[in-house]
Image (cartoon, rainbow, N blue to C red; front, top):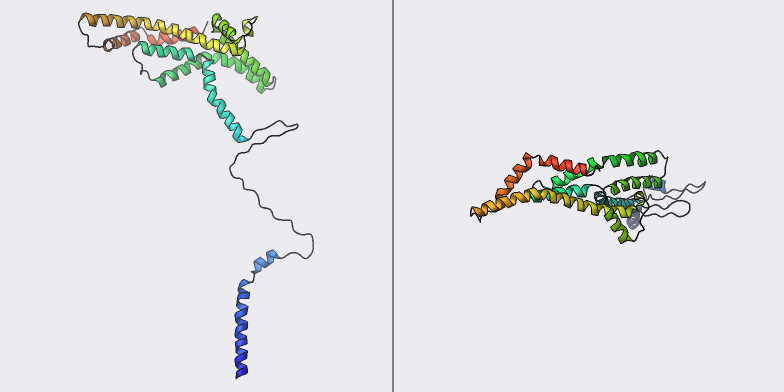
Length: 276
């Protein structure tokens, strides 16, 4: 009986000791993957592919290849150029004269809010496109098309475009304004107008455009000032001191402007001022 009990205890202990070993034993799939082939070269080491997440790449190459900037830096430079392009284009086209004359017209008619600033600015923009179209077509035909067809390089295309633009600027610029900018910059007087440097022609053109727009604005103001004086004299003679003259003169200005076709005259004068 004692021997039977000893054998039963040993059997139970053996069963309890085998259970953890069986639970911790690897699965067949794991064993097969961890098995190393007894013959042949060892398998190549496994590498994890790098993640392709968002980031900033800046690369500089030396040697025969030219340096290249990363995509993010190129986008930043492009956005900077686009932000400066409107200011550069507006000062090198007829936009300044048109928008200043329209602003003078609104003030002369005592209507600073009508038409809205967005409307007058958009109208000035499309008038600029209308006036500058011949210059843009010449630059496209003489500079851009040959460059795309690889008949000239980018330096020659830039020289042709600058020469065509310089010709337009100088035709609309007074000689005294060019002489003033030449004196301020310390640049020698060029032999021919076509030889005027581009950095001199642009500020001289802007200065001349402001002068011309102020002269046209003065001419626009004269008839409306006469109407204001007549209405003020009539109201004072009638003893109506508390009635603002603008209340009476503004409808008369609108009536006069519509009857004489004021908008047609203003647009025609602006377009013909660039034809010379």
